[in-house]
Image (cartoon, rainbow, N blue to C red; front, side, top):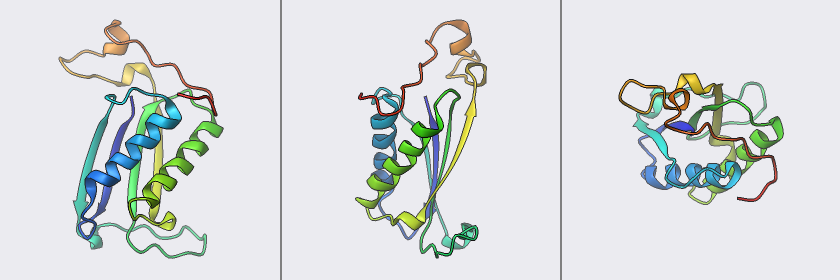
Length: 138
């Protein structure tokens, strides 16, 4: 159950395609259900996004900032696979690889409430999702 925040400049007019590409990558790599989709998409003035190269020697032209909040338990290899899949799918909707910036935050089942003031993973209303091994098919 990832919660994904997506920020991009208002010069990009394809928010739905960007969000869809990111979600499709998560479904493909993590094997989550298609309707397990929680995204917050914000188009903002480009001056409000600062994302330099961190010393890697490239320039970003129009960054897309992606924050993924999800349950811990996936391997580093699976995360790398996800990052690559997101970049590949975003390229198909016009986002260059140097413009993809991903922050990944892990937490536990006690850190989620899907409504009604309850932590449904803790109450048993929802089963805690199992991590899919790297390279496994959906």
